[in-house]
Image (cartoon, rainbow, N blue to C red; front, top):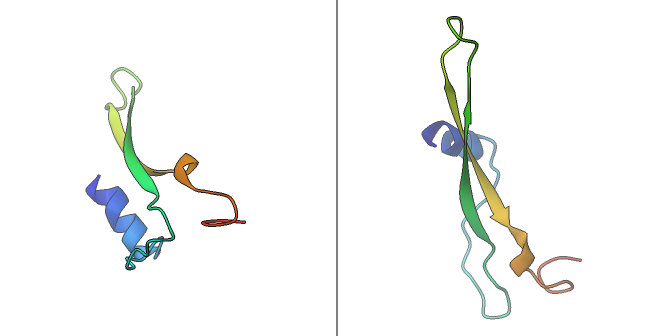
Length: 64
């Protein structure tokens, strides 16, 4: 998770802003994945990804 967060910060993926009453906050959640390595060659790898939950947005208000 730390590696993913550092990547999001370095790429300036988002910025913190004050929330107004007219807009809703877009939620997010962490997705975790385990990838099996090749037996005897690769170790098991773990990946984390932060994704937005966009179904809370309203058309014409938060996006067009």
